[in-house]
Image (cartoon, rainbow, N blue to C red; front, top):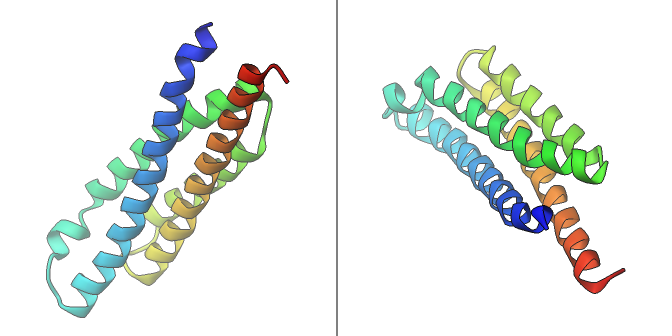
Length: 134
């Protein structure tokens, strides 16, 4: 019973993680185009606080949603993939702004997003099995 009540929360967190990953990738691409190409918005787009807050949010959301799924369903793949992505995102904070940072971040957010997608698929298949009695 409690699992059914928690399931929508996990789905929302996974969807929020996917959205956050997409927004982060878009931010990286816009940063490269606007700052490097046009020379505008550097103080906003390249602010370290944006990247640190983004990594913190991604870590919290992935930790709760994917960690929860890993504990509940004993599936390591979404967790390992997402944590690898978070490692890439953390590494991006250690390099200077530019192409290297963007590449590391985009790889990281793609992996985190993929971990959330796998988690959502498993939640969906588990919910179907519980409803259908399989």
